[in-house]
Image (tube, rainbow, N blue to C red; front, side, top):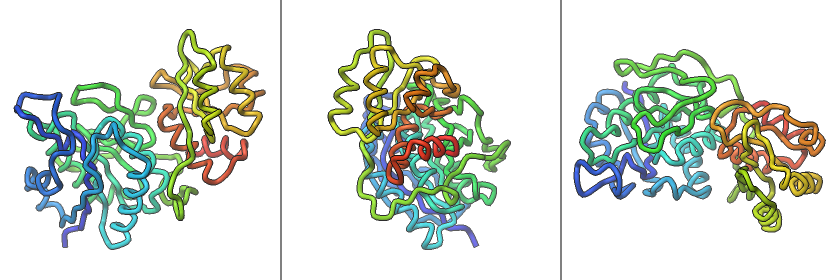
Length: 328
């Protein structure tokens, strides 16, 4: 008997439509429904039985935490109802964020795979159909069990923990800068080269029961000429925590240091991430340690924001949040 895979659509370029087949920009994201996406890939029927549902039909630049919460619940329901795995089609702009959120909150060893496209469905040489077929094959594979939430695009399999969008328009737009891809799809079969060692899915401590919104965690961007105005606005608007996307090794401009130190002293966790796109944030200055700032390790700012928000659902304790950033 073929495995049952649930395909959940959220819109994005993979479901985009343009007026011309040579138009790679200026298209309408999320224009096509699940039925139209599946009709373009009849080979899926050879792999598994399919059920599908539309969770959203948006450009992923407009992704919201409300959609995340609904999507997580829908995935849990599909897996509990007997699906062998779930595929989520998604726009590429925030795909890595949605994937990491699900990586932390879905409580199953069954595969959950996100995919998307860099060219709309109407384009010449559209990349979406093969990405979707690869995602279904990956979700149906026993090799994908227990690997956490996965992302597959352009033949590469990535962990939600590590993957980042690294190019604005190229088809090869995703990479895992610090550790590389988990593996590749080769002739329709997943070949894994490594496994994910950080905590995720069934080993995760995060529970969304009763959660209707995430704590407010803004990101401040470090740059030459920085001043305290945006930091002050974030604090005064009720930030539960703050991620600072620092220069280099998570460095913080001296103009901001006193304000963020004071915030940390008042119980607002401050996480140091880096804007560079690769590399771990490590011990840099005793002033950061003395202030109680938390290092993001290799998490980029957008993912550090997600982990901090989920941590704040559990605790405000500085040492506990620091532990969470070490383990996830």
